[in-house]
Amino acid sequence: MEARAIQRGVRQSARKMRLVIDLIRDCAVPEADAILRFSKKRAARQIHKVLKSAVANAQQAAQRQNTPFDADGLRVTYAVVNEGQTLKRFTAAAMGRGTPILKRTSHVEIRVAGVAAPAAPAPSAKPAEVKAEAKAKAKPRAKKARAKAKKKKTTKKASK
Image (tube, rainbow, N blue to C red):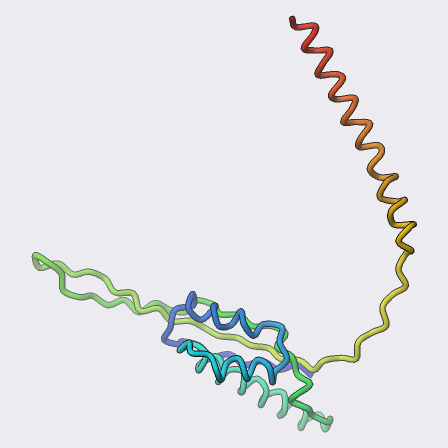
């Protein structure tokens, strides 16, 4: 089950909001909720709204498909903050001039998905075999390096 929520035109710069969104990326929803609730950043409140909306959207999708829903099993799979439209304003400056003020906005997008059961890991090669393969790959490179070094020495002697 995957759901997403987008909030556009948030009146805060994307750069400041990215500091908070980086904290919750790839977290479980309850953990992300706790991080956002106790964060002192102003952006955390807006991002928390979007997270709650994404969870509610997942719940509605589960209801439509008539499947069981567990909000604690959800995980933040995708969380980005993009720049929105910049509001351009001017303020008075010296000698009758005006200096621009850029009021930046941002767009927040969060996707949540249910955690699938972890698949069994594929059988891996034995450590001794891996080391042998690494040595086999390294030998030809070492020979080439020695050959280049010899070539450089002979060209230096010839030029003298």
